[in-house]
Image (cartoon, rainbow, N blue to C red):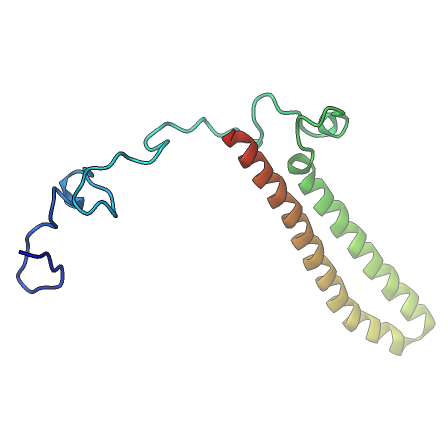
Length: 147
């Protein structure tokens, strides 16, 4: 007898065991043989620290002056860098508008419209760049924690 899950009225189980509804005794790809769960299956995860750092990790200014490089400064500084970058982009946009209106009204209006697009693009570029660096640091932390 072969197992055909699409056969009408066939409620038999797949060959070799309990299948999925039988309490998780069998895992996919087993073709009827019992397998062990993957390594780490069912183990409790360590509690998550609200700051996003491990208990022995330095954060903020202490991470900047960690000359042994045992902790990463990026996760604790990423928010500050984004805020500072956003403020600088906004101030640059406003100063360009002011300078353009000082030159002429038409230049000011053109700078107002085109400058908004440039400022938005700069904000997106800043965000993507910071997310990239943060993702690289997170991958490095994950790799380091697996060892």
